Image (cartoon, rainbow, N blue to C red; front, side):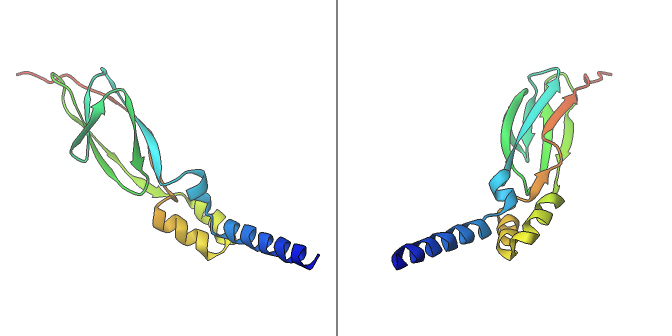
Length: 131
């Protein structure tokens, strides 16, 4: 019987430590988000921070704690530039505070409490003016 009580206490301690070491944003969202890139007309090449990432329409996963410089290019159309920024999701911080300091640190270091300001980017491309 005594061994059973010790086992239950040990199990309870493990569960409590597991709960305290988890953080809201890391569990529910992670440190990346899917972003959809679209254009009118379609088939524009999209460069993210100078790297060709795809041709519209497409989805890619981007880190939530970074900012991005996005350029849409298509022959016969003017280039369009979009700045994709991130901000801290206040809700995740508020949820981490009652769960002690460890979840707060986990979300901060993983970048999980950041959210991208946009996850659907649709641009309308203008034709180039030929003089």
